[in-house]
Every structure is written in C-alpha cells, then in structure tokens.
Length: 167
Image (cartoon, rainbow, N blue to C red):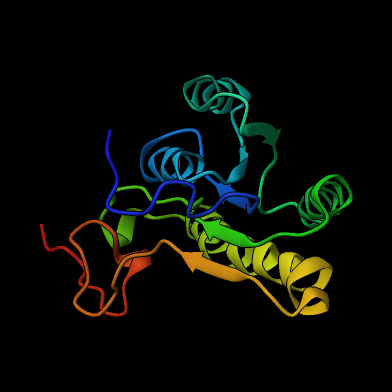
C-alpha cells in the first residue's frame, strides 16, 4: 500500500491507538507504523490486537485494556512513558455503539455507550496529557467520532437529536 505521506514521516514517534484490533483503529495503526512510528495497540480483545500487530510487525506492541478502567489507562500511559519516554500521538478510536430504537435501549446500555465514548476517551486523553504531553510540551490527540448533528436511525445515544419510533 502506498501513502500520500513522505516515507518515515513519523520515524521515532510514539503513537497509541485505542480500538486498534479492528476497523478504523487497525487502519490507523497500520498507517502510522507504515510512516515509521512505534505504535502501541490497545483494546479489549488481545486476539484482535495480536492480529493487528502481526500485520504491522516489530513497530507494534500489544496492550489489552478497557478504556473505561481508569487504573488500567493510567498503567498503560505509565508503561508507555517509562518504555519510550513520551507519547507523541494518541488516537482515541475505541468506543461502542449498538443499533436499537431509543425506547429499547436500557439504562445500562446507555451508560455503557457513555462510559466508552465519553468517559473512556476523556480518561485516555487526560492520562496521556498529564503523563507526557503537558510535561513535554508536545503531543497530538486525534478523536475518531461521528457528527451528531442530524442523528442516525437506531443510534440515538450517539446523536444530539433523537426520534422515538412509532409502531
């Protein structure tokens, strides 16, 4: 695969990608590694992270964690800073959605989405900023998200406007 970016554009950079086991997270991690970055892969499923790491090669390391777990997030950031000295880029890709009409989403289901998409993303960003980016006066945070302005059928919990279905 060729890239529009210069080879080794991210040489010697340390990037963390959450939700790196599949989809956009896997693609982002692969692209970052292809540009020379060391990529820290995190997500809940070790097997998927290991598959991504196998595709990337030596530039990748696997770190299973749930971004909702504040202690696990802090431990990951401490480990990355201890091992590599800094965090240059954090890609917040992990999250959770499920298709359901608004009236069928339970309070627990709604809490899970909020904990993943809002709290988990905040915890990752806060820990990376406090442990590396602020002290080093350098770093970038990329949040992979959707635009909630017009809503999405079946994904009311990810949108500003919600419509209850009528049966």
